[in-house]
Image 1 (cartoon, rainbow, N blue to C red):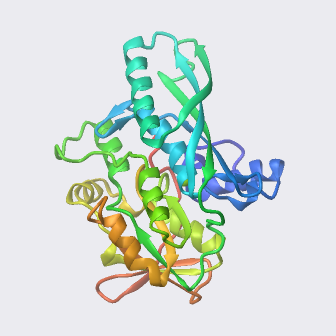
Image 2 (image 1 turned 90 degrees about the vertical axis):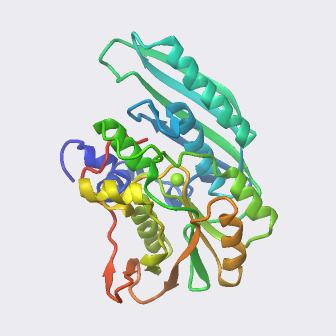
Length: 330
Ligand code: MG
């Protein structure tokens, strides 16, 4: 590994994982941490516990802001473990000179999103640092959720499972990039930033036998599929034609040379369910977003690998993203 931290070390891909395993996991080694789930499962499988920091720029963007993101990010990681988000903490690091008006807007959008999850902020911290020590505001949230269905895990997907995607991909990454670069492609492009707990609750209420869930945040779909292939020691075979990408996102990717599969999402998730439940599950997902679909099968063809089957009949490996993707995307 390099001697100093580069932006690539925060990319949600190869370098990020290397940093986590070689520095943090090495020091903090324990069984709960090393399961590498979206949230830690503690207290004999009854509680989920997670934390996330938010540094997005710009602070306000189409479809959300740093406050909404700070609640969605942590609550979604809890929901991905089959948990109902309950108690959150909120820590802010604010730059001297930051506007109180903007702070109030951010806090009120946090409260709005907490209401959607039925969660509350029960503890917090505020630090103010001299101008230039931080860019405007950084927020950290941590959360505890009550696990409604035990045993959901990214480490036990097998050939009896099928993989579903909840909606079209890349909206958050494309929106942030477009607004940062002052590109106005369309008035309809907006971040997918949203709380996933209501959808998860519905899936659980309908008794869908869920093996695993993971939201496709930094590193996008490519990162989650590769993490699942490695963690569960399986081969994931994706039908490329089933992955929905809007014209706006596709257009931006073509102009800027991005791969939509690696763009960040903030309200889009992958779901592994037992084969005979797949159609029922996709119908439920479609009631929230019509672009939901079954996208992949699980096999043992090339273990720990993701294969993309194109509509032309060709096959290629989909690698874990690497390099400096988009820093400060969340
Ligand atoms: Mg996650």
